[in-house]
Image (tube, rainbow, N blue to C red; front, side, top):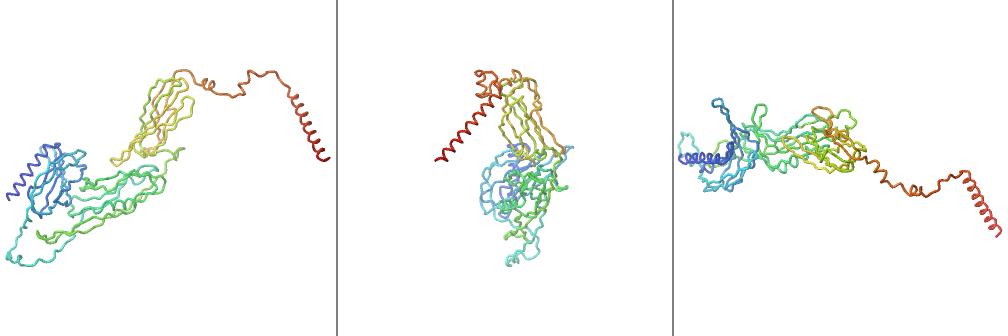
Length: 477
């Protein structure tokens, strides 16, 4: 009893130490300094007055084996003020008796990095279970134990493939999430099994061939508390991607299966025997179909991008001089298939010469959406003086699936061009050829066309006479 009380005091002391060292709303606590070989030891993350959005993996500790996690949430109202806390508890089981040193380790909690100081703990012999028994205490000692009977514990969990919409326009993004959900009331002891191999096979099954994919690349599978129809669950995202359909074929996601290790529990637990037996359970998702809608009529509907976009532009100067170059940036930002954004349309005009732009893009996959920007940096030269609206020269058309209509991004900038027109420069700089070079040296006296025709007749008769004379010589020989 004293050791339990001493461990409780140590836990409270460590909690106060960690709370003083960390941010006010995050704490990490250890289990007791001393516990029995057949008891669990814990590391607990607690967040006060905030949601535990994500956290990195709990440490792997030599001499201890991870035995699943659990979560808890509490809410209190004191003098009209609400306070809440949320905890994730990692259970460990000792391998052998004796002293053990928990080394310092680092964790990331809600995007903040923390270093947790280690400690020394002691694992004692298995604790004896209290039981009420009116039989002779020596009877069980000499009695041979029978085989342990294990029973199935019903799991309160499911696998689901969900999408952010049930139908989409051609080219519109469909965010797809495959996740495993465990109810807060679940009592079954489960853990993932060979997850890397299973995910590879699952992705092959659900990935549609007629779509452009933006993969969210989930590296660490961490539980996130959510609420579904008033019930609390822990969501483990296994795979997430946004698909952009390339044709009007419906997207069909098949049912996929995920195999987990699930432990059967001993019907009559014993401190000296096995209290659980490893087994497996397979969870299956439901199939899902997404219908693809054709875009409304428009002359450019086969070429426009689909999404929610806005324009950010920049220009080196709005006071221009003909013949002198300037830089102009047309930056398209928003949510959609950033990789597929087309070049803006530039009107063919003699006022400006726009050259092929340099292109840069940035894609972000977060918060269940694909967003980013694609920037086109142009080099251009003005040719004619005047005041011009760049929106009349360059623009970009897209389809907004939320408003269900086409929209246009066009420049709001106006420029003032001064200087001489460059039309005369084009004429003077053009090489008209040797024909025009001889004009100043040729006679400008008119020549009769009929006289030229007489010379042509005389020449033709002379050629004919020569041919006849040649034939006569050949025949005489």
